[in-house]
Image (cartoon, rainbow, N blue to C red):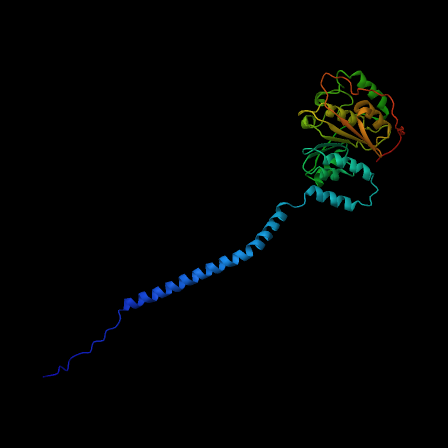
Length: 314
């Protein structure tokens, strides 16, 4: 028997394509495993850090979204800078009297102020969510205020009265009680000598909750005096729209002759509910259009002492 010397040894090798598939399966397994492990670790870490992170984010959001209102910041800076100022200003008791009324407003207050004074920024801050409007006789001072504090609403007005004309102006108002100087009217169309009729239309349409008469500032024979601002405050309060309601009218320097006599004539002693230092506090109710008397109990004199018309108040 012959042996075939040409017989070849055949070795069987795994197919090359089979090896490639195996490597790919292992690679896919490791990728899947590490991906799962990564997500599991991330989820676990988030459970621990979320409360702190959320709190920090909330705090940051609150700080950036709800900063201290500009009006309050301005007021704090103003009074810090003028703590030792000699500028005339209200006493602590007078400030607290007005602030208490602003706090008691059932809804955001409409606050009208005659006179740009040392307390202007304070009133704006205290009436934070309400509407505060300033009326002053100096266009220059109003312009300065608006430039420094653009969020404050202020208007200048031209007074045509004089302190020396006090008696004649009161007599004229009495003569025109049923016509131009009646207690209930839209002053925008009035020709009453004491009425202020050159302010923007909305001033006569708004229902004012609080009115402060602290201007014009100066007080001498040729100065405009506060006859017009007191008369206008009385008419605005009695002509109040939107269901009526009471209006608090404050008159500063109430011991002086102009403020005392006009207060008695147009705001009425019967409506005086409080007197704090030299601040008179009146509460007026809405009146019907067919009533032509300012006071139910007219009085021609006052128990408060009269002050000299030569007194200066700058």
